[in-house]
Length: 418
Image 1 (cartoon, rainbow, N blue to C red):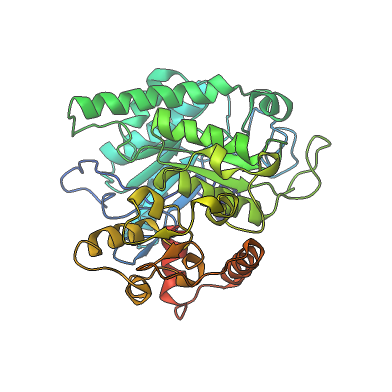
Image 2 (cartoon, rainbow, N blue to C red):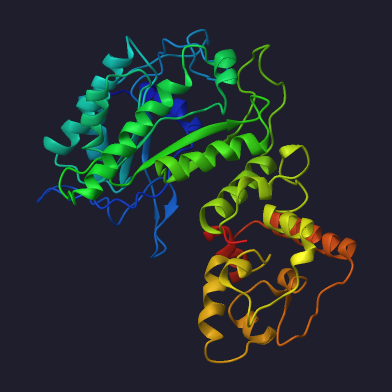
C-alpha cells in the first residue's frame, strides 16, 4: 500500500520537470473506459473552453544510478529515496481520477537498476493503465536514455506524449555536467519516434498511433555557458527537423551544490525572453539569427520582436492597408490573430487606427511602426521609440494577471502573441 511519505517524496522530486503542456491528443479511446485525453490536457493548463485542468506528476523512483551535477536526485545527493510499483501508480491514478483530482498522468523516473529495467517498468505501467484499468485519460511519459528501442516504441503506442529531455544544449556541457548521458542517447530516440509518427501519418493509422500528441523536451538555462543563439538554433532544428510540439526552458536554480555549477540562478527574465523568441520562430516566421543581437543573445530590455524592429527601422513604417501578411506579423503590437484579422478586414474597407483598436491591436506599441491611410502617429526619434517600448515592456511584465486584467494583457499572456 502506498504511504503518504513515499507519495510526498516522489511528487516533490518530479516538480523540476517542466516539459508539460495540454495534450492535443487524438488517440482513439477504448469503449467503456475512464477519461478522455482529447478534450483534456494536463497540469494547470487551460482548455479552449476556459477550464483549468490538472495532472498527477510523479516519479516511479528517485533512486538514480546517474550523477548529473544539476539534478537534486543524483546518486551522490543526500536526499530521502523512494520507489513505487506499476500497480500502485495505476491504483493512485484511477483513484485520483474518480475523485476528480486529476485528468491525466505525467510519469517519469530516475534510472534505477538499468535503463532497460526502468523503461520496462514504465512501459508496464502505461500498458496496465490502458488494458487492465481502461484508462482513456491523458498520459505523458518521460523516456529513458539508452533504453531498448523496442521498449520505447511499445510504450509510445499507449501514451499520448513522450519527452526525452535534452537538459543541456551542447555535447560539451553534457560531458561536464552529465557524463553518463550523450547527445545521441537523447536525440536518436527522438528521431525514431518522429519517424514512427510520420509513418502513422502517411499510412493514415488511427488506432494504436504512436504518441498522437507528439514529443516535447526541456533545456536547463544558465547551468552551462551557451548563448541564447546556441539554445534557439537547437530549438529551431528540433521543431523543423523532428516536428517537436514544444521545447521548454527551465531557468537554472542552484538547488544543489557543485563546483561545476554557477552559484546564482539564471533568472526568470532570460527564460521569458527565450519563450518569446521560441513563439516567434514557430508562428511568426523569424529565424534565430534575426532575433539574437549583440553577443548572440536576446535583448533583456525589450521583447525579441521589438528588439528586431528597433534594429531594422529602415523597414518601417508599413501601411496596414497594403503590407503583406509576412510584414504585418513583424510589427510589434500586431499578433498572429491580429494580422489575419487585418488581412480579412481590409478586403472590404480601408482601415484606420480606430478599426485596429477594435481588433485588439496594441496601438501604443504598433503606432511607431505603421501608418493607416497614410497617417503616422508614432515617434520619429529612435531613442524615443526605444524608451517607450522599454517602458511598455516593463509595465506589462510587472502586471499580475487577475480576473480583472485588461483583455489585451490577458490574451497576450495566454496566447503568447507579441
